[in-house]
Image 1 (cartoon, rainbow, N blue to C red):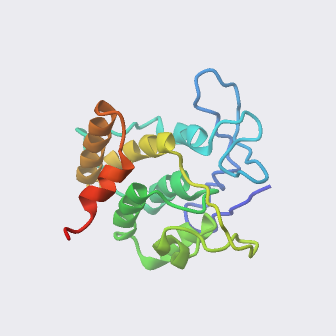
Image 2: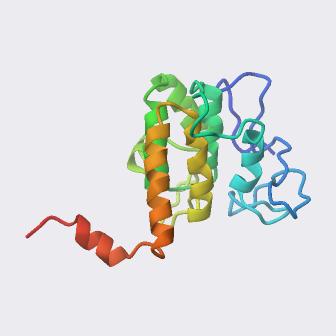
Length: 197
């Protein structure tokens, strides 16, 4: 069953990413295609691995590089990247939203609308950064989104574009700094970012 038909977002030869036979990218997994779970759409019903582990397979032919030539942010490629972040999610991690915003700024409003609608998002929800209601109408009080591990995998994919490469390089330096120092301290981060009294 196709959950999110693309309509005219990408070329007519492409099908919904959920319906494609995208094998799992986890080395020990033999899953041949992603099948979303009924409730947790970002997890595969066949192998239990996440959507990102499957969907990244379509990017492996041309891995991103911080030193190679930049790619043109065509609507089809922007859709594929958007699906890594937005498919089956009800919230968007801030860093990934910054990068998506940068790519969406070079597309037409119609192209952005088609991408968002194809992935089950309204423009208002995307601008807010999270959905207020489940598409069925139920008010949400908890949200699924890319995990921190998935976020780091997706972040690297934005190195391919000139519009996002410098931002990603800075974000990755922050990740390295955080990993060297054992992670964020939430209270010190809040203390450092609050205005002086």
